[in-house]
Structure formats: structure tokens, C-alpha cells
Image 1 (cartoon, rainbow, N blue to C red):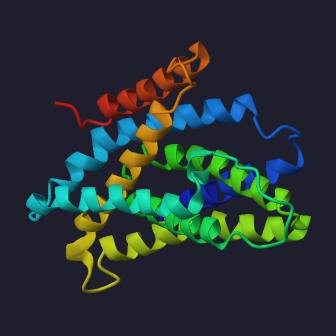
Image 2: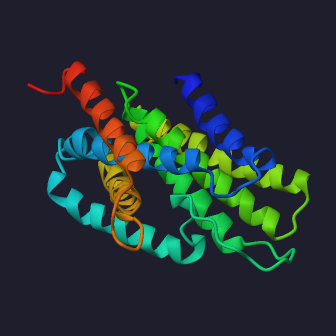
Length: 241
């Protein structure tokens, strides 16, 4: 197992959430650009790598069904997370009531996102997921702060969220190499669910725009950069023939 991937997954989310104590504004332009870049990158990686790999297995006829399940699952999760995984920050009442729905759905989302990394041989996905978790963790920390939580508790919950993707990676690694017996044959179906989640997240990020449906020049540049880097990795990794 590549331990460096676990460190990148954990610290990108943890430091992204901890940045709430340094950034005065919760509408940081830099975070928005990171979100646009990572959304475009995730979409391109999903189309270029994950979908072809998932359909490569013997049970490829069923993959489309599991992609749809993943897509619908993400819609369901967002009923509780309120779009935090997109970097959305919602104003909450000043109360110490813990946002269980947001925390649980966001942790499940991060756990599932870590699973494809077991077959990320060319390291195309690790950076996209890590960048994607920065604004998500920041938004989660912002909600906890608005709800009146103490600093040490915010750090604790951000740490819990940050460890979810590495756990997903660890589990899928055990499944893919056969050390967790009996479920390896279902790996591509699990990847189908993750692909559906990625498609929903990335397209939501890309299609969300201002009221007049115009995309700013900065966001367009960020999106094109994300797709371009994914394409460079695709053509240099030997996938294209």
C-alpha cells in the first residue's frame, strides 16, 4: 500500500478544515477556484479512467445499473449534507445542536470517494479527490463554527471527516488484492456506485453558476486547467491508443 496517499488524503481535508481559523471570510475566492478545478478534474478522470476500467470486468453489463445507484445515492445523501461536499456553506442558527445529518452523510461520501484509489495506478485520482475535500472540509468547519462549537471540538470532527477517505482506500485495497476474501468479485460494482457519486458531484460543481448562468473567466480557466491536466495524464499514461 502507498502510505503517501493516505497522508495526502488526510492532511488535505484536515488542513482545509483547519483553515477556517485563518480565513475571515467564508466566501474565499481561492476555495471556489479550487472547487471548480477539482470538479472538472474529477469529471475528466471519471470519464477517462474509472468508467473504462469498470466496464472492463466480466460483469460489465451490470455496471450501468450501479452507476445509477451511486448517482441516486448522492442525491439522497445531499438531503442531509445540504451540499457541503460541493463546498456550500449554509447559515445555521447559533445553537450547539450537532448537525448529525451533515456529518454522517459527508463521512460516508468521503469514505466511498476513497475506494477507487486502490486501482489508481497512475495517481490520476488522488490529487483530484484531495483537492475536492479542501472546500468540503472548510464548509463543514464553517457550519460547526456557526453552530457555536468550541475550537477543539471542531478540530476533532474535522479529523474524523479527514480519516474517512483513507479508510475507504484501505478497505478497497484489501478487497482488490484479495486479502479481504469473498468480495473481490463485487469490486467493479462498488466502483460503479462511486462513479455515479463522482458524476453527480463533478457535474453539479460544473453546472452551478450565477443567476444569469454565466461562468466567470476565472472559473472557466480553472475548469479548463482541470480537464487539461487529466488529459495530459491520460495520454502520457498509455491509456490512449
